[in-house]
Image (cartoon, rainbow, N blue to C red; front, side, top):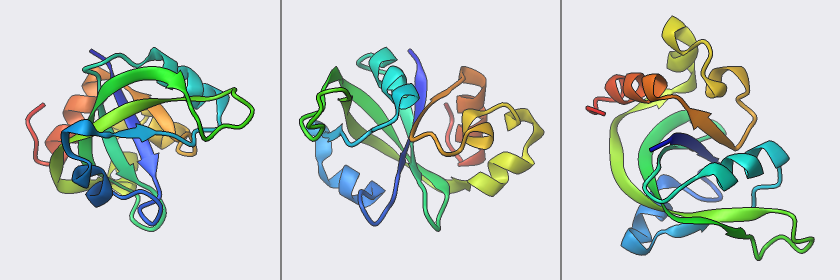
Length: 139
């Protein structure tokens, strides 16, 4: 299993909206970055990801599971990019902010800290465990 981080503007697609989709989940569409596309292509069913609110909040607020692997994104008229399907798994008991991640030396190499603009990012198993613990979850 691999771990990921999915960024979303809460005004566009929030954690609450994701949770309302239930077990059927929702396509993670609209990605228009080639590095993020490669990350989507590497995802497998069962992989887990942090759901991250960007914008003003800048915090990990929940955990999602990949339930559908890479396929073409119908919102991409050029046919270059794709999507995966994700479903909400659980709330982060306490959101973990970007500032907290940046302040933790053990997360200095985390993609969120180093390349925070990328919309879909890999997360190492060690980073996953640490962020889960910071948010009050046992990994």
